[in-house]
Length: 241
Image (cartoon, rainbow, N blue to C red):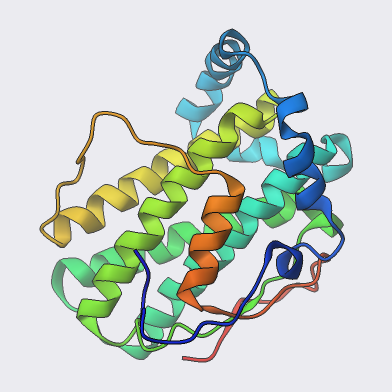
């Protein structure tokens, strides 16, 4: 599913959002870092207390990025790039249109969540954090129909992206924090699906997506107009309307 299929999209590649090769290197080595199924279940159990704690789990991200493996840093920057996109989308939606009713509450609450996710991930990564790209949402934040469709696509993609990376995380603390974000993204996806009249839970089992699949889906939207540098310069996500 893509947005504005009739429009020619910029041909961004993994290299555009990975200027120092950190994500590509991690993708090449993820099989070596991946846990066995039993190991993943063990780590999930260890992280459960932090997930339930919510704030405590996100607090675990405060550890310096230098203490994490190269693979975990790459995964966190990948998550940060997706959170930049979502945060900018909802921030712009709140700015350009006076929403009403349930949709107004959705835009307000989810936007605050996404900005909190960005702040937590940037704090965790410190100087290793990727900078925000620039975005052009092509009018999807102004039209209610386009907003609903795009929000559902972004939230569904976010859920599958986190699910795809969770088994590959090395650190129990990072895994616990990532799962705390993942469950909230799943709630976002169910919420917008409900508002759109779609099934909040259409299947019994979600299929995770790889980095390559998710980055291809994001590229296909054409929303990224300038690729980020690999070091953060701070500031808020920029967008062009």
